[in-house]
Image 1 (tube, rainbow over the protein chains, first blue to last red):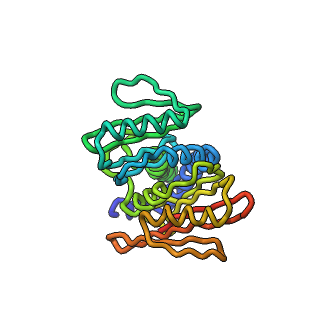
Image 2: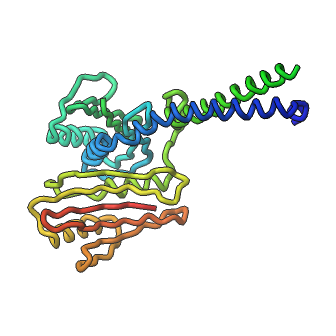
Image 3: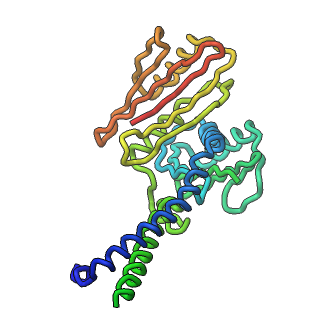
Length: 135
Length: 151
């Protein structure tokens, strides 16, 4: 505050002017990315439809969800299943095959692909994390 | 001297503007991560999780054809919702209502209004917030259903 009082009026006016210019240009650049992201309506409907469809009929509790962002067009959901891991995996594999998903070898988890979508399932103890991503 | 003062002001304004813009851009692009690396143990609020769980728990008939899924998920905003629109082929309106009534009854108490073709239900959360659900038949032949879950 003391430093500010030492600045004269012209310095402050110049500062406000250049600040507004920078923020305005940044807004224009960022806004074009936002518009692009928020107008991907059809792609979002496709992504959320796949996310909705890929749920097995086993008792569970959703414990977290991370939605898509500009940098990562995927939905990550964490579930706590009350049945065993083997049963959950078996049910998911059945469901994915029924919906024409194709398994891709992956050493860390369960990876499936269908058209432009990727399904990835991994386990951390009892918690199952599912990521559905548009490639 | 005057020229130096103006230059100083412009420089300060540029730095301040860039700093604010970077914070803003970072938040929009990477969200709640550190340059794409996940750092939180939980991303969504309990209200949002409840909303999405209810949305996913209500299963649609197998012959459903999805038309649109839209949402508004800003945690601090009052209008948190997620909605899907789907066409159900080969079922009559009343059968669709009965199907969803049975589906919802697994989790919630509900009210059904056959004249307005609406099923409504609600769930109270531990933090006193309320999640409301609405299944509405918008069109009869073919049956177009709109399912909305909102806070």
